[in-house]
Length: 161
Image (cartoon, rainbow, N blue to C red; front, side):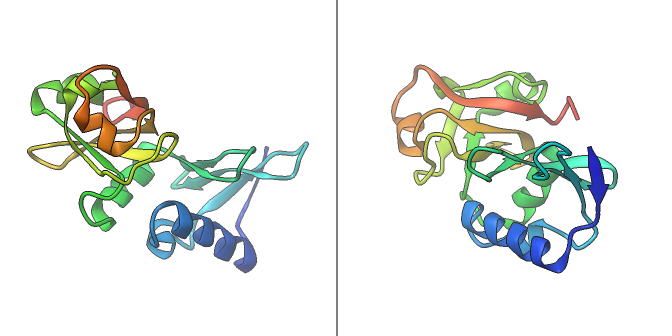
């Protein structure tokens, strides 16, 4: 893997992708001091590092970002509520923070605009603290409508970081 600083054009492109995916917060989400990790075989960007830790990953197939907890914490601060958030009952917080998947019965409220496959923030319904990041399995409106099935496949819980 090749590590290097992004060019101005790459930084602009990454921020534009973040703007589209995370509703206009690319400038705030991606700082100037990130480091790119590039695949030597394809010469495509794979990861964005911040403080020598994986901050964001980029999916090769569609060039969309994959959230990690460090980026999730930043998004949780800058995005207006309830954008891209799944709010879970506090009694399940510890289970989810340790990496457990989120089921519809855990969910108190969800952003109705979430689509299956979207990157989402899982937060505690009482404290609004980030518990983990993952990929939505069902649409946001359906997560709160039904009380069965998987809502979010958690990638990383805050306790795992």
